[in-house]
Length: 208
Image (tube, rainbow, N blue to C red):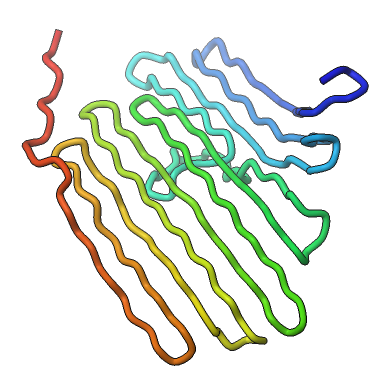
């Protein structure tokens, strides 16, 4: 990349507030005029809230939002996912979105891709994504995943395949979910639930 040939262009408008009396920092930002390979538009928002006031210490930074399982702090703004559109129109349409967040006791990240294409009365839809939430103390991991593909004739579904599930650990480390298959009027679902690593939950860290 060069200044004239910027393969990745990231421009961000930001507004911040430093409150020395409350020992706090707040910042909000939004992507503007940002592109990949000079063609694909990048959009999204981020926010930061931090306080070092005794008894109220906290830190929250989110780029594109939070894990769906996480309850955001009160008065924290709702953020748009970091999104890239890999097609210029609505047919075909391919979008990818992601997020990353850090709080005082969690790490969160996830992504999702969606595809849509239609021609001659048929349409194809695809969706794949994951969401990961890690609690640091006590350590706990939960990851949700899902994927699906569907073929339609008008509004009638001709074929659909989907899978979704959850991985949770570290001990016991367990995976559960379901896979579904549909074709015309026939459909069936397979459920799975398996412990990959058995054992008790990790002990809490010793107090200093």
